[in-house]
Image (cartoon, rainbow, N blue to C red):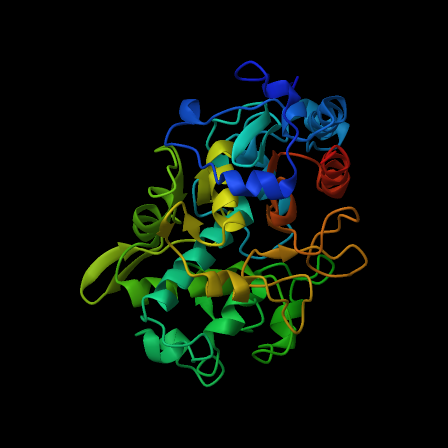
Length: 402
């Protein structure tokens, strides 16, 4: 069962704080899961019973296979369930690490304080496309540092790799790659772009259609995400997990349990140095393995738009751009910044009682990092049936009294 934390200190239970008051406290957790302060949910403006109901709902709606398959191979064994999910694709075999996952887990944070936690929040599990959030943050650092002069620049001049200099790929911009509208065409690590999520009925559908026009349409495609990661590696000349750790994760007090794992065959040579290129997801294995506690820290970092206390780690302008809807996907900003679109279609999330300014990082599984700046709220929910994602967030929002 989930647990809503109890009050720390006499008199706290009578303290009812609005979202504005919570924001003024500006509490940020010290390094270490056990150092993160807990507060009573009712004292932090929640209906405790309703919040517990939302947690129970999340636990009860764990991602599972159909009953017959679940009986012989539980969905928690990602070493089997991931390959099964993509078995219809050409070139579907995993090329990166996979690992069994834990139980449904989560953390709810308000005003920086943990008010609820359940499952195994300390366990570092796969997060699939939330890896793209790490990638977009690293690209943001490159822009802030001036290593990328403008996101409207073509990527090709920054990358010494012939695959970026074809007639088709040469015009592709950083902005298009970040918004997943690039139409980048080629093969990386044995995976051609056309083989990623083609029609189940016609696996050759994307091959037959040929290269999409750059910038013309949104299309979720991990090969193109991996191309962005490779381009960022060329720009930094350092492996991206090292940049992410030193510039963001260590400063925000993340644990040492997370890792950003490459494909087994993703070694490249840049300026005479052998390095491992990062993946932008877990489609073929690899990607970001991380705990719910560390995801909550990343959510708090987003809530504070790149600041951590007195330290500006990533520019506010980068978050402004990341949260600006794309022309072809109004519910999607930069990579893995999903925007609230209660009545929309396409990418995005749909929570009718959440503010328009709320956003989320989403990964398969389902992994959710939901942020509502208006409520000074970060919610991490892991391993919930994707069809129930909106429902659990609506229940959490409904549990807020002040």
